[in-house]
Length: 126
Image (cartoon, rainbow, N blue to C red; front, side, top):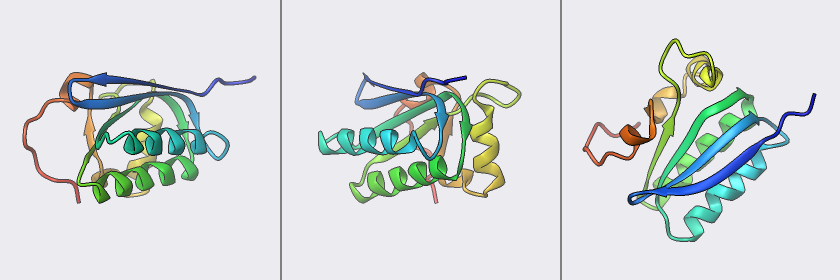
C-alpha cells in the first residue's frame, strides 16, 4: 500500500501554515524540512505546522520538528504545532511519539488552527 505524503501551504492572518498529511519518516521528512526552509527564506517567521493528518512519525520526523523549532527561534520567530485533542484517534501518533521521547514540552501545541494563530501571549517554550 502506497501512502501519499503531502505538504500544502497557506496563510492565516500573520501566520504561515503548512498542512502536513501522511507518514513523516526518513523518506518524507526532507520534504517538510525544505518547505520550512522555504517559508523562512520568504521572510515568514511565524509558522504553524498542522500535523493533525500525520498518522505516523519516526525519529527522522521528530528531528525535522526539532530542527524547524531551532531555525524559527534563530530568527526570533514562533513555531506552533497543531495536534489533535487527547482521545482523538487520527494524528495522535505524533503526540504520543513526542511525549514518549520527552520533547513535547519543547513545542507550543494547539488543538486547532484558530487557537494556534491567536496572538495571546502565553508561556514561552523551553
